[in-house]
Image (cartoon, rainbow, N blue to C red):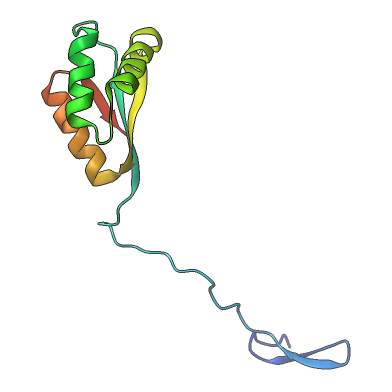
Length: 108
């Protein structure tokens, strides 16, 4: 007969209890948790650099004109760029504002 997981089993002459390990970390199932997300802007050939830079500086937290130009250049040459990374709620809000300015965006 097999012992249950909570019975004592002789091992090397010592009685050792076998039990399932206790969890060492917990997992949150809270759907309102601030998940990591990113905002991607795609090239649409319908905005000038100045328009894109102005939108980035206005709506992306912590953005400055130098970084905005670098991102606009990347979008123009590579077709897309990640312009924001952070919590899901803030990413969705930022994407919504950029889309309101006419940019093609996605949140991942």
